[in-house]
Length: 239
Image (tube, rainbow, N blue to C red; front, side):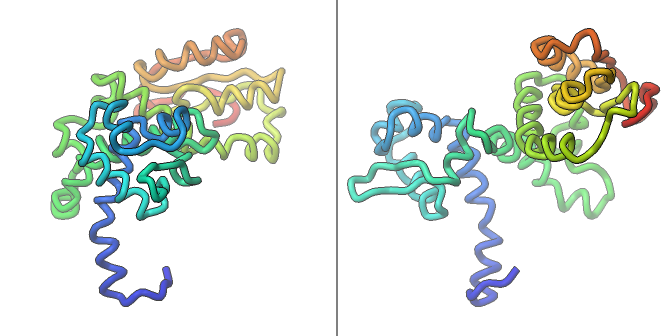
């Protein structure tokens, strides 16, 4: 990556990249982008009142974000949305809010053990959390739901180009291994009315997927099956 900054300045920015990551995480947790979208430009006092945060501290948070183009500040000290900040809205078409929450929380804890993982060859996640990621998400369903949204938001833009450019009609049964909440498989089945599907994932994930599949009217063509894809997967014509 090329820029016009001296190398020691560029690497310093990278070294302190974690500060921006955590600032984005906190802003997402506090729903700041949604508040600004709803109320219009807001100052620190208003944000503190709405979020229950400390006024001076949230002002510093917002200034840090604005310095990176995430929100903008006017001369009256009011903060507005920018294209980057809009990505932290819950219902934005390009929302990365759930990813910011997961990455700045759960993932961040795991990466604190990167040195351990590099030295030992063992999983830093288990060292940091005390269990594997799938077990943790199973034991913490709210974080599991956030992770599901993060994956949907991150990969959501891939689904439409995939079904537009790949013909699934020759396949009688399509298995989505690790299918999450079922959005991708649902889109494939909606495009191919004669095709059946199997959503295969862990039990706690399939429980969250059931309502989504039902809401899209696909119960008759989509089977939801729980299991461990490290051990075996259901039989199908395409995966």
